[in-house]
Length: 401
Image (cartoon, rainbow, N blue to C red; front, side):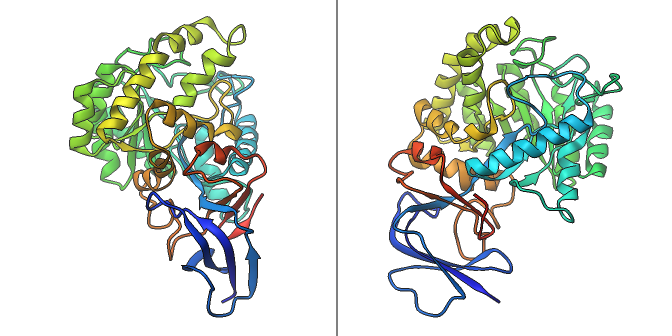
């Protein structure tokens, strides 16, 4: 076993609201895992030594909601081919890692490209975060997921399901392909032209079937849920996380706490559309986003104050929401009412626990993978420190950027 000693740093492990000065840690170069952590002088020999020069070290970001297939600038949604989706995904993943995102859950990829890339990298590594794939999402016919794809329109972005039995079959198909999470479209959304944000789409019975089938196969369930009724149905059905939660009602905040449901706000996805999309996006997208943005922040803030389980997600790939901008979500969470620690915890152990990978990721502890960022400023004092463009990014103890 060869080891590397990283020393002379201010260490935020992600487990508590404090930075440890004059810290060091060692990494097994063969496994990429942390073997020891401490302060002051490290006793014992290491094969390699890295002086971090008093900078701040924190866990890599775990982004629980991305769309690696999407180009945030062209915003092309229809008739995408598998080739262009794959090339876009590889570009996005590299950009995500450069921004400090070391683990992602993809929440819906045409052609199951996230699943395929995750399998491919075992023999042919590429630069990017680790991936927890969902494959194609579950949508009702005409709903938020019914996008025509393929050069000749031969497929759709999502599985189209219109009954509990069709949902059962679709979840089993996703399981067969290699999905580790099931994404369900509980409501309408901003990017779909056929519906409104508060449309209730998949029924309670269909959502309940998705949860039953997924949980029986050790998969999680993430619900795209923006409208109040669809949010409620998703929570009652037992999904693991509500994604977005724009019109989250106070009574459903309490229900989420009772059931342990996570909220992944993706505030940046709502923020970028009206800010950068004027004259560039279809009017229906602008109208939908502008109608709920203030209420969105208020509702997320109420959930934060109530202590709902919080995950970090960006919805990267949606309009003008580039993967390189993932750290901006931390600042928006703070704007909504989170403390710096709440936001950083969500981006580490919060998301890792939701994704059931907290044994290996989400914090810097002995035995876990050494995925970490090196920053000039203290992120606990100001989360904008994570936006540093030239920060160092380590994955499994190896510097990637």
